[in-house]
Image 1 (cartoon, one colour):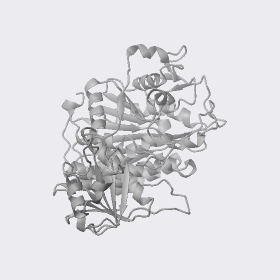
Image 2 (cartoon, rainbow, N blue to C red; image 1 turned 90 degrees about the vertical axis):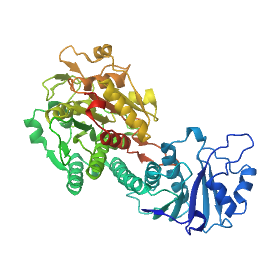
Image 3 (cartoon, one colour; image 1 turned 45 degrees about the horizontal axis):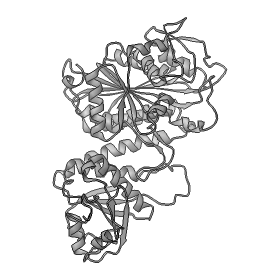
Image 4 (cartoon, one colour; image 1 turned 135 degrees about the horizontal axis):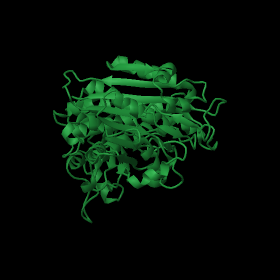
Length: 501
C-alpha cells in the first residue's frame, strides 16, 4: 500500500473515504463534533452535529459511523471512528483505531482513503502510529486462498500532519512491514516452513538487508555438543538448524554492550512422545513465533541502524514422535555441560533455548532477551492480553517493560524468586525440564535461567499473545507479530547505563 502525506484541506480531497476520529464528550450534553471535526461539519452544513444530536455519533471506542456523499466534502464517504475517552487516548489507541478503520473500509471494497489527523496528533509519532495501523490492518493471512473476497487497500494519504511527520511515516512503514513479515511466517503451514526452509528464508532476508548470517546444520550442532537441542530434533526426519544473524553498527565502540535476541522456532510441535491432544494441534505451526519475531526485528534494525551490535540466535526444530525420538526419562547433556532429565517431551522449547542462550553468550552477548511461545501456563495466568515478562536484572527488565509500554504492546512482570528453583530439581541429573502443575510458566523461566549465568536476561513468554484465534476489528486471525515493536524500541534506545550494566 502506498502511503503519502497530503497538504490539501481535508474537505477538498477527492478520495473514496476520508477517515478521522471523535472523542466521547466530557460533558453530559457535550458533543464529539469539535476541533477539525467541527471544521468538517461546517463544510458539510451541520450534518455531523445532527448525527451527534441523534445519538448515532457518540465517540465510544471503535464505534464506526460511515456517511456517504456528505455535502461539502469531495470524498465519497466520511468514516468517523470512536476514540473513547480523550484522557485515555494514546499512540497505541491511534494505531489500533487506524487499523480498525482500514479494515472496516476494506470490507466495503474501498481501495483509496485519506486519514485526517486531530489537533494533538500531527507529529512524527502520530504519523508512525497511523502508518503502522494502516499497514497492519491491510494484512490478511489468506495466502493460499484462491478466492479472495476483498483485495487490499491500495493507497492512503495522511492529511493535516506537520512536516516532521514524514520521518514517522517512513519509520512506521519499516516496522509494520517487518511485523507483517513476522505474521506471515507464523501463518505458514509446517510442511512449507520446515527448519531448513525457515533457515533459507532467514538467509535470503539477511542477504537482502545487508546482515551477516550463519546457518548451523546438524553436523555443526553436534560438533558444538548442543545435546538439548539435538534431543528434541531426534524424532523428526527434518534436520534442525540454528540461525545466527548479526547486525554490526558502522562504527562499533570497543567494550560496548552487545545485545542478543533469542527466538524459539519449533516449526511444528506434536509434543513428541508426550503427544498433545489432537484438538487444535494444527495451531502448533506457530510455535516458531518467537523466532519469527526476532527475524522481523533484525529486518528493521538493518534499515534503522542502531548504534549497538545485535546478534539474533534462532534454534529451529520439529518436535515429532518418531522411532528415534527422545523419551520421558532420558537425560540429555546441554552445550553448557549441564545434564537435563527430560520428564515431558512436550516441554521442548526450553530445551532448544538452553543451547541457544548458552551459544549467544559464547558469541559475546552482554545482554539477552528471548521470545518464545513457551507455556500454556502463561495463558492461564494472563490470558491472551499480556505477554509474561521474567528477568534476572531489575534495571534491564524495567527497560524492556518501558519499551513495551512505549511500543503499545501489553506485557506484565512475573516473579522469578529463588524458591521456585526447587521445582526443577532432578534426582538423577542437574535439573529436569518440567516442574509440576503449579507455577508452570515460572518453572519454565527458571529452567532457562540455568543457562544465562550472570548475563542480564529477560524472557518473554508470548504463548498467549502470538496468535489470534478469531479476527479482531483491528487485526486478522492468525499470527500477531507480537514483540517486534517492543524489541525494536528496546534496541533503538539501548545504552549500557539504562540497561543493567
